[in-house]
Length: 457
Image (tube, rainbow, N blue to C red; front, side, top):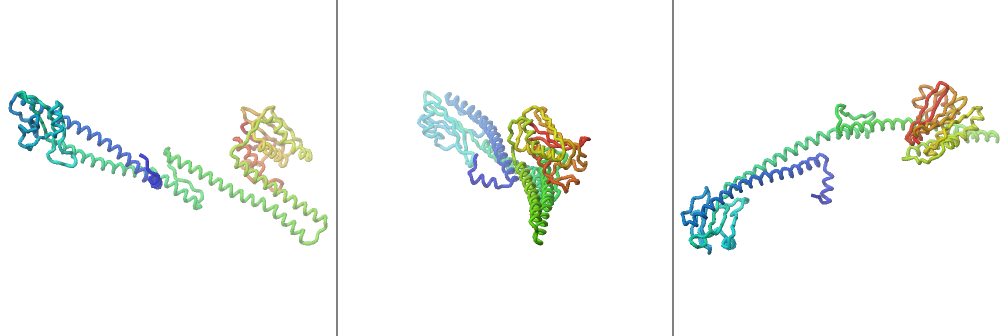
């Protein structure tokens, strides 16, 4: 059964508990109606069979008596009889019957032609008096046609069926009420944890901190798994909020320094007249700080774009060409500082997004040149369809307390806080590795620091 559009809309607006109870009530109504109908049909069939057997036996005895011209035998309790001629005139009849035929003219004609007529007089509901079940058949007595009508009263049968209907209706109503109540209590109990989770989420929306839902540890059902999923989501949200607060604080700190230097340079330049040489030095200093701001902004935009990229665009390229193109811009920097830049790359093709992987490799090399010493070695190999690239130097390595957060944004070792760089290079490397479905790593080798990435290719 389908509901009209307005009915469906009103149904969807009902609370979940109300809809569940309504579904239980409708389902139980259908089940109870079917069960009650089956019981009623079986009982009525049994009563009708017994009544028909008694009626048929009585009519046969009447047929024999009329053929033989004998006295009509008494029938079972509540039985009645009529003997009619071919024209429908009543020849003999029970005292309780009126002196008019029980058969209609059409039924009389059918019996005269040899048919057997069976019919009920009166109805079960509404209650009527004088309900009968009759059978009529033509017989021949003394060469003349006679119509024998046998009838029995249906009062006991109808009363039993009416009592059965009343009991079935009462039992069905009580069962429906009990099932609806049990369904209501069960739905409330099942949805109580959901309401508790909703309250916890509302508390979080109002600004609560460090919120966790109370999820039972000794259960493993759908609601419990939902609670664990929500707790995992809350942990992620809390960690994300903490990273955002730290990002804003670090970004504010990183931007404050170049902006303060810019303001100081301009204030000094405007404080008194300056020579052309002094103004040139001031503009160069301002240009340096502006470039630092541009680099920082570009790095932040790259990280934001990388984080919002749903899928990387992979293309197959030779690994040697990829690494060489990423390292080439840094060879002059290495030469100016008297450093050696060694590259060892496997002869293989890789399927990666060169737009992101090339600058990531460059960031690893730049980080080793800035903060390490000695020879910078770049190695890349492909094993089991995974690219593992590592950049090492011969410096002092990473500080132990710095390693766990080496790839966080704006994180720099204390010794390099005042040096060049924004602290976003390694964060960009990890973002590229994650976008490719891989990971980034940093470690100390005993002879210096090592950083790299491991991605499927």
